[in-house]
Structure formats: C-alpha cells, structure tokens
Image (cartoon, rainbow over all chains, first blue to last red; front, side, top):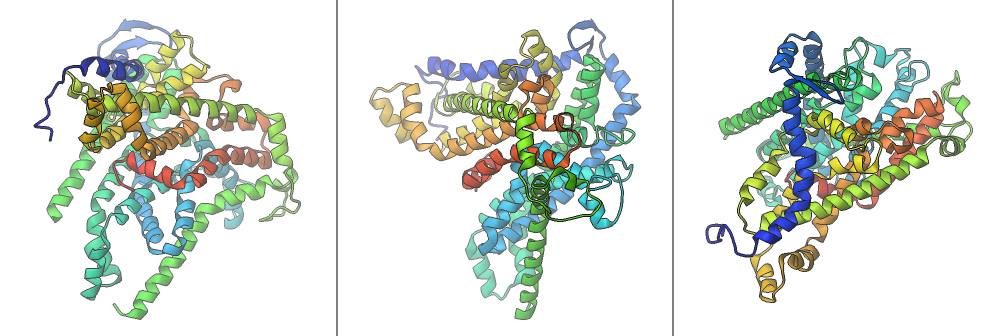
Length: 293
Length: 277
C-alpha cells in the first residue's frame, strides 16, 4: 500500500504544519533543547542559575575517577539485581494464576494491579509504617526490633520488596495479554494428544510467552535503573550512602551542591549506561530466541 | 500426568493465588486498620490487628489540619490539564504523521521517537534552569508543560490511524472536507476506545508523577499529592493513624478510577507497550 502512495501530496503541507506545530513546539522546548543542553552543560562549569566556563571533558575526567559516582552506579545495579528477575518471574506467575482461575480472575487481577496505580508516596508511607522499628507489624510478626531502613544489609532489599509490591502488576498485565493471545485450539489439539499440566506449559505456553518475557525483562531493567523516588523517600540514600543511587547522586550534585555541569555529565553517563544495557539485553534475548528456534 | 497429579497442581495453584493475593492486599488493609484507630492505639504496647475503638478521627484531623485537600486539588487540576493538552497535541500530531504526506515526515517522526531513548530524568537539570529563567517555578504551567510531551501516545494513535481503511478518508475528501475536519468528524468518532484508554493512563501517570513536581515545586501550597504525602511527617508529626489516613486519601481517587475504568486502564497500559489486551 505504501508503495502506491505518493511521498508528498499537494495541499498537505500547510495542514501538516498547523497540526504538528503545537506538539513540535512543546517537543523542542521541553525535550529536544534540554537534551542538547544536558550534553552542552556537561562540558561546562555551571551552577543552577548560570554557566561560568567551557571546560571540555574535565567533568568526565572527574567522573571516571569519582568513587561516589561508581558507588552510586553499583547501588543502582544492586537494586536492579534485586528487582528485575523477581519482578519478571512473579509477574509471569501472577498472570498464569489469573488466567487459570477464571472465576476469581477479576479479583486476582485487581489485587495484583491495584498498587501499580497508586502514587509512590502511598507505598512508601505504608512501608515505613509496616517496617517501623518499635511498633511496626513486620517486627511484631518476626518478634524483632530491627530498624530495617537503617540496616546496612536490609535497607536495599526492603526498598526492592516495596518496589516489587508496587510495580509487579504491570508485568503481570503484559504476560496476561500474551497468554490471552494464544489460540485456544493449540491447547485443545495438544490435550487430544494427551498432553497435560506442565507439558502444556512447556510446549505451548512458554514458547508463546518468550517474546513477552524478553520485552518485560528489557523494560524492567530500564525501569529499575531509573530508581530514585523509592530510595530518596524511604532511606534518603542511607545508611552510609548504601542506597544512594545514580539519579540520587545526580540530584544532589545539581540541587544541593549546585554543580549543574557535573550533574549534566552524570546524566549523560546515565543515559549511556541505560542505552548500552538495554541494547545488550535485547541482543541477548534475541540471540537466545534464535538459538532455540 | 494422571488426574490425581493434575488435581495436586490445581490445589498448589489455588494456594499460591490465595497467598499472593493476601500479600498484595494486606498492606492496604493494614493501612486502613491503622487509619481507623485512635492515635494512642498505634503506639500501644499491646499489638492488635484490628482497632479496639473504631474512629474516623484520623481522617478528620488530616483534612482539618494539613494541606491534603489543597494537594488533592492541585493533583486533580494538574492531571486534568496534562491529560487534555496531551490528548489534543498528540491526536493532531499523530493524524499528521499517519494521514498527511508532506516533506520531512519521516525525519520529524524519527526525531519524535528518539525521545524513547532518552529518559526524562536526564533532562531535569536544564529543564529546571529553563523554568527558573521563565519564572515558572512553583507554577501550574511549570508543573504541566514538560509532562505534555508524550511520544508514546503519539505512537499509539498513529498506529491506530494507520489501521483505519483509507476509504474512510477518501469519502470525506470527496465531500471537500479539510484535514482538521476529517480528523474531527471522521477519525475521532471511531477512535473513542483508544483515546479514552490513553487519556485515563495519562491522567493516572500525571496524578502519580513524583519526580518532576519534586524538582519544580518548593512551596507547600503548590504540591501535588504524591509530593505532599512525603511532607506529612512535618505536617502531622510521627502519628501513624493520621499518616495512614493521609496515604489512603491520596490513594482513593486513583484506586476508584482504576476500579471504575478497569478495562480501559489495562487496555491503555498495554497499548503503550505495543501489546494487545
């Protein structure tokens, strides 16, 4: 169809300009120019209000030698490690349960998805109260008095658990859509051949879901790398900066140290890491799919 | 596998479903149980799962003393503005990308999709500096404007318009209708479902947005609910019945929106990932 259509059509130019202008202006002002500006600012010595000097790659030279930056990147990876696979696997399990128990599926889906539509601070307030050292319900059940968010070992895992509760519903939804796209005839035919239970899952369900799983993993990795709110609100990066993540370090550099140029360099490095990781992961997922095909 | 083994799996599945559902609902129920008790019961030495004395005191105190009402109003206004403007901009742009043939179409569309690669988080510092220069810190315009750039929404609408048969448009062109008219009276009426779905998802996203308001708002009166709720320790002190009441008040509008529009919400979130619901 596209081949037969002309690439331009008389009389379309003016309407196109009019229709695109409102979006194009906001896109330029609030995405494109700030994106270029982030890059330019990373080559300068700037504060939050003014740019003082062009300093070339100095910010990046400082960055690669900055232990605080690498610690923050490491904390971010640790958070990703604690969340990406659990969120994907749990999302799959929930979707399978919702899909299987048809009579309860509306209720189950609602229960699993509801937290995802809540504001982050609803989650953090409830988590803070449940994990409260002296009167929190978690300590009561476990018979402890632990200050979870001040604990070197437990602070990040608790942030991860809160995040899993809050966001797993989205992954469940993706898997559920994948499950519902599998034609019922496939199962019927396999059942006639005597296949049951786990065999059905291994031969029909999983192959059909694998592309969804790959996409969920990539999206989840990007989402986890972008963590900021959960740790900022629940632990303020502590104890001893063990939960201070990349974006938190960027935020502090810009808005508490007013070192906007260095913060911009952190932002550029952050974008580079996120893009490289998602390309690598997408590549691995595609390679696995081809190998198994 | 024989019948008995299959029954075993069903029982294990049912137990897993029950256990997980309980785990996912429990924190919200516990927040309710806390919000419905008098403050002294939250620090009582004896633990109780349910309030010993049921009261709406915490909700009354939160609504009377703090700024929760104001934050809810700000959130509603901001989310509504973001949704209406995003829908208008994106529908127009998607229609142009999908149905008009003009020079530079592919390039402009590719630039728009580039925004998928660069996370909004990376733009915070220059955006803040720009808003500061424009005098838009602590203003509704400052909170709303960067949120209306939504390439995902444009992508979804473009896909939808692409799939509408060309005869639709050609019949209208025969009648001498211009592009704006065609968008309004031919394409919009058949796009109701997807527009609703994207509008609701945009609304929930704007309502819940924490990061940008956190950067651009410093005055308590201009805070939206996700941001305001992080200030509740200052407003109410460490009073957990009131903190849980505030959290539940913040959760209520989106929870209701989800319950009422469940199908459209799930449809919208799935459309944004390119999956069909």
